[in-house]
Length: 111
Image (cartoon, rainbow, N blue to C red; front, side, top):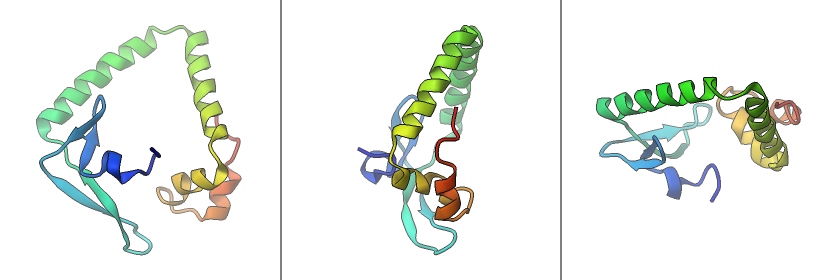
């Protein structure tokens, strides 16, 4: 399974795990118009539950010691650096519309 594995997320949304959705939205690449896949659309009730869970998680995070939070962020940075650069290029190139050359230059600049 990879981050971009549409078999995992296609037609779904993420809220405490991938959830099936009764409605879908196509996702297209703005620069080319190519269809990338589909994502699920959450209902107002889904958003309400997700917001409540996020508020709970924020309180838990705020209560976490600075040392533990730093360890979590260092681990996230380590995971980012251990992912091959070729895989990471798409993470930056699509959302912020920078080219692959710029996306590659961000390597190693995480926490």
